[in-house]
Image 1 (tube, helix red, strand yellow):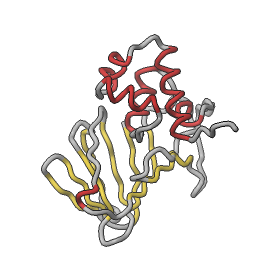
Image 2 (image 1 turned 45 degrees about the horizontal axis):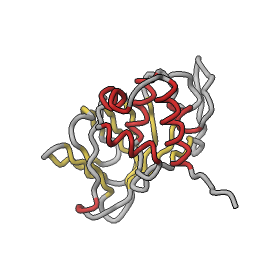
Image 3 (image 1 turned 120 degrees about the vertical axis):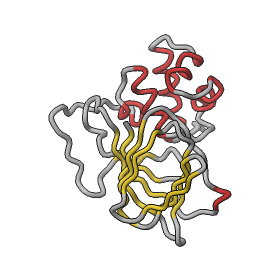
Length: 186
């Protein structure tokens, strides 16, 4: 009986393959992406949730498309990419959030836009992230609590937030409802 390889394991295999194809050590990739070599090793096993921001940084560091890391296919569109409502590429790599990639058909985009849905959760369940780059959030539905270092910001529909992704940050939906927003990683 063959063992089924899930989406996270497939992404992990592509991560390792890309790193090895570029001749980078785990330490060199860690330095280029702002994580530790232990994090790189953990992400490459497929047993650890892989932050989309890390995938973006790996793609940049290795000169690859994020789409290729996520799907194994190359994006080919260079002039524009239309993604009809609800047809973003579902990125099932974290249990905490639901991501839909919106630029997955565009060849080597300079930013990565996503529709992100964050469920409501207890304060103790919030996961802190920190990575290279910057992020822009534009709220669509619900209310979102964003922790930025020691600060707490609450976003409502049509609010926006721009921040350095190096700032430790965590999010959760409020009022027992999920929060949905446009997230652009630069």
